Image (tube, rainbow, N blue to C red):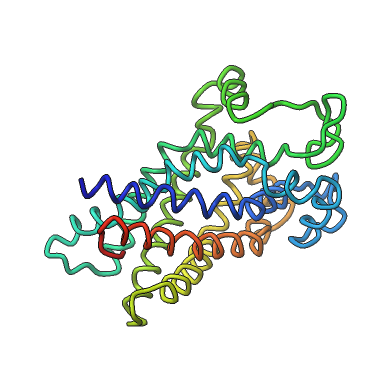
Length: 291
């Protein structure tokens, strides 16, 4: 029963936060996949891309809603596992209830990896929908990364069916799964371990101020740690293989792996500012102790 409450507190909290800040995820994906040899955005920076998208496609249509249905569904599923199983796993690892940093890190890595493994198809669909997003005229994109190309997906279900039909499970819906699961494990391990540890270190009263501060700090720490894997994951989900990744690295240098870091950190930090206080509040209302 307690585990069901943990899931009920985690899923909605994650979905609300990710949905409200979908604009940062959209911008990050666009920046990561922007081809400088064939530039689409005049100023390939966080501000430049966001302003051009807002101008050409509108704030809501261009930044807030691309891949939103897949993002919300994924957040409910992934969030339930990544946060909902964390406390139980940590208690099991520590045995005597006296957990340390390694217990927290390993617990976060396990629950994040498990949640990602289950929700990977939704991650692929979300990334492709965000990458493809643009204004459509006569069945073709006239803005965005896919400018001039025909529309591939009409929505989340259409994307699922098209990817499965044309590419299958392993090379389609689970494309780049190894990198996706690795990314989720590292991100979740770093985020929950730093959040949990910061709360104890600060020794502030349990409440919104503590949750806000530790949420933002843990989001920035986690995203910075996982950014290289995040960039590779986005590229592989669009159809690239390891050869393509290494070729891009040789062409652009190692700093390519940190392209889109600013919107990624801003997005992850703000997501956690919303997500962790919401989860903590849901836990309180359901009678579960704080993380």
